[in-house]
Amino acid sequence: MFVNLKTAHFKDRRAWVVNRFSGGRSIFLPMVPLMIVEIALRWLFPGFQTFVTDWANVFHYWLLFVFGFLLFSDDRFRQAIAVNKRLALWIGVPVSVGYCLIIPLSESAFRGFTDNPSAGYLADHPETIGYYILMMVLKVVGEWCWLIMFLGYTRQYLSTADGKVIRYLSNIALPFYILHQTIVLIIGFYVVQTTFPIVVKYLIINLTAFPLIFLACAMAGTNRMTRFIFGMK
Image (tube, rainbow, N blue to C red):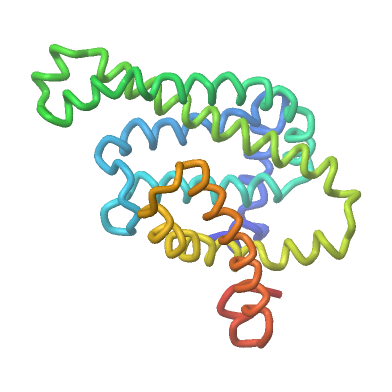
């Protein structure tokens, strides 16, 4: 799909997308299809991460993947990100705080619907629908704003960082992403069963997982076969 999008056949369509979404505050408009996906699918697929029973995450992250390709396909998008990074930060912080605050407030409403998943319950408790829509909107707005903020500020400050460090981290980005969950889950499986305070568990998992993930990435880069498998240059 991306190869086709780069061809001359789609040149005019790409130009329309760039012109439509790179000016002013239009860089925030991609939040809308993400909201639609979340509101329409999240209640049906609440988070079991598979390709068979989790179409909410599949469509959500597929859209983010496509948006990421488009954002870096034209310098005007990168300029729009740079211009709007501060606004994204100012929006992202209160929205994320609001999202965290509303979760405990909505638990009783969601628990009631889980115990009685019927149209009658929703008719008698319309606040459940309101909580659900509000949570999905806050989630997407916060997510997109943090992405714009991080992309904007990392481009500003990391572009002058040590080139060797950036090239190394860029090269291991994909294997780091592929390997991190497996390593974190293996460590966490044993750590969460201990009686340590939750903060101690968190620190143990992080301080143990990070060096092991970097070690695994280093091992993945030792020969051509594993480099190919993990998408390393």
